[in-house]
Image (tube, rainbow, N blue to C red; front, top):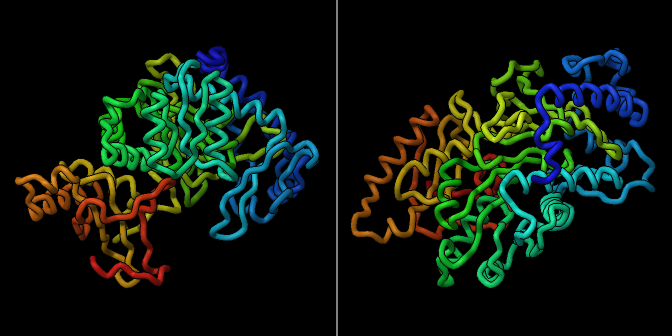
Amino acid sequence: MFNEEAQMMDLDEIRELQEKRLKKQVKYAYENVPMYKKRFKEEGVKPSDVKKLEDVKKVPFTVKDDLRDHYPYGILAVPKEEVIRFHASSGTTGTPTVVAYNRKDMEVWGDLMARAYSSAGVKPEYTVQNAYGYGLFTGGLGFHQGAEVLGCSVLPTSTGNTKKQVTMLNDFQTEVLACTPSYAIYLSEAAEKHGYDPKEDFNLKVGMFGAEPWSEEARESIEEAFGLKAQDTYGMSELYGPGVAIECPEQNGLHIWSDQFLVETIDPKTGEVLPEGETGELVFTMLTREAMPLLRYRTKDVGSVTYEECECGRAHPRIEKIEGRSDDMLIVGGVNVFPSQVEAALLETEGISEHYQIIVDRDVLDKLFVRAEVDKDHYESEEYDEEKLKEEASENLKAVLNIKARLKLLEPGTLPRTVGKAKRVIDQREEQDRIEDL
């Protein structure tokens, strides 16, 4: 076990360390980041007001717009000369959000990622095929660095060139696949098209999947296709990147490395802290980051946290599977709908594949439109009955979502495939190219 001392801390040790680090980090951010000093004064809060963990609620929130408003260097707590790496969002919706790391931060991030691999069952002698994108996105370099810290060898295949990815899975007999879950599904389909049986011909043992919401049904599909253990990972660029939380082999929640992060769950509308176990928006405070400390960062990710000790023996709190993002949530007829819920409902229906789209129409805001591909084997079988399958899938959608959705079944291969995050939601209120065939 990598860094067993940190992984196996008991809850009292965790809380004592969190309190010590929280007080130090609040003072550090106040003294070194002008934005925080200004925000504290506006709220009438002093670092000395934070004496125990519960006092974190006195600290003002940080949001993504704060990073954009202070682009590119405004939240640095160290001289730029001490920064050894920057990462940034794509900036497709406006000014990019930039995150910075000094040497100490990079060491911490590498440790967190190595813990994640180790917790997921990865061994130092394994080879990791890293199909996350390299560059400004934190995924590729984060998963790469952590694998090397653990002692693994790495195939930095990055995204794309799927035929070569499949060939290398076979030729190198890699034990670990790191990529988005939607790309893992795409790879299994591509492997079969090129004459491989992923379960028999490959040697995959562990999948490190993240960067997008996915359902238990998608996990089962991936595990069945490759014969591996599909592990959910959690992170975001603002919080180092991947490595914030990871599933252990028990797969009963994602352990947050709480010696480095203090997590809260809040009501996304009021900002009030919610009791343990209630579902709300996840808020993180970074406890040791030096180059760009973030206090009470609102992630917009929706989930719940439990502090019950896991059967694996780890006392680090666990995030129940992320339901989605509050800004991805659709409100349809007054009901909250997450794309992952749609996926779960569809995959409960035998004969529906993992490829689907949710359509939001600019004229009809109180109805949901879903397009879903039929599984190839089911589509080609003599038993295929389109109306029967459509009726069953529609009933499953209604049971999960509590609203009626208009469903259209598509032939296999109809929807576009992607090598990164799958685009599940099409908002036709904003896009000019409309999908009329609903």
